[in-house]
Image 1 (cartoon, rainbow, N blue to C red):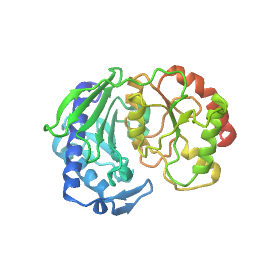
Image 2: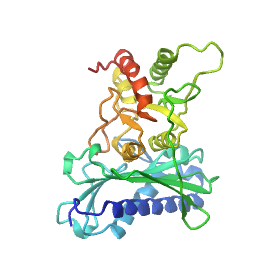
Image 3: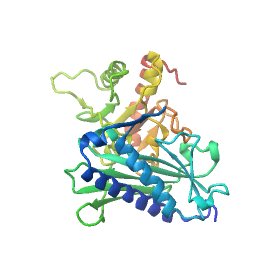
Image 4: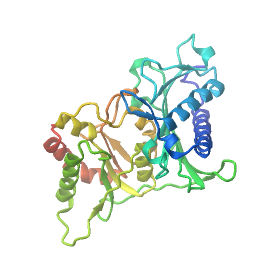
Length: 342
């Protein structure tokens, strides 16, 4: 059976079951360990710092794929924590022939928040028909993301989609053996960001001054300076791309831009943490919900499916909002971040 004639709905359900296993694994590990144990540094890679909590989920990923991934649909794994050259194929008995699929996974997107029990992290996964080294983000046809909630939560949300099939969202009851209930998520239909959340990401010290100046200039050019001391736009530095996607999908945020790679390039900063393709594994979900996710120049967002490429992106809750902000954003990117787009 080839990737072409596989049932995409079955694959969506498979990704959801896979992520439910990772959710249960994390909860069990968290109950058995102290926060400082989970926050211990395990390894420094070219992509990111790997903490002990990451290693727990990375092992669970490979164990589950080895035991449950269908042999007639062999899959190559690209994952944070694995070097690009490794990319194992599952199940093992299928390694003698080319894979049917490429699976890109971030087992914990938002490690820094969840390991201190501050805010939900997310499991991200995207599945694309296998093209070897030629695979790109636009090839992903099935995607899912599952919440890794804090210890205070009774519920974890799970979102998934097949390209062209619309967004599916469910709430998993953590106290009822994984029972699920349908959830309706509605991105904002507003045409502006006044008195709402819109954010330019600057999670860490590197580049934060430049990015803050960029954000201030963006809102000033769009909406002017407020006459009252009350701010017109609020920002939310959620250290998780998946978490940021969820805020857009749920209607809580209207605009988010992660321009860290452009800022680092302008400042001559090398090897600092930025968004990578695995952080964007669930990008398909925004497309299926009618949101807009694109490159800073307004073109299609695309990148190789690897673990090291830095990626800048912009998300809008709806096309009308994008049409209103995009022209000003492009001018400011060229002016302040040194990228002259046509």
